[in-house]
Image 1 (cartoon, rainbow, N blue to C red):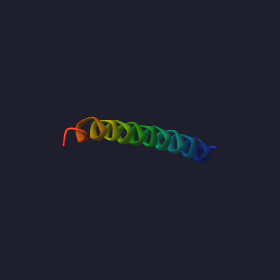
Image 2: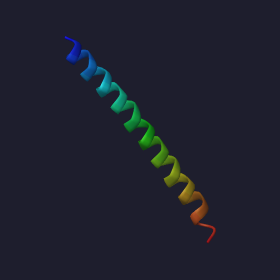
Image 3: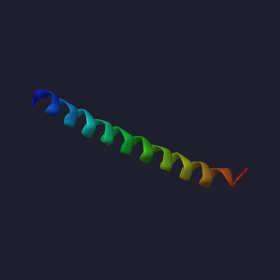
Image 4: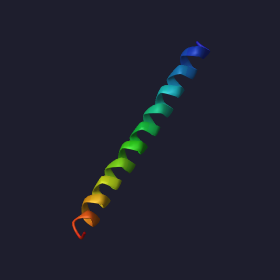
Length: 39
């Protein structure tokens, strides 16, 4: 039972990290698009 709980916590943590990375990547793409047209 403890292993299942730990596995669930790791999965939730991984999901949160993945969503943060995706959000950062989207923001970087938007920033690049916004500033890249000036050059």
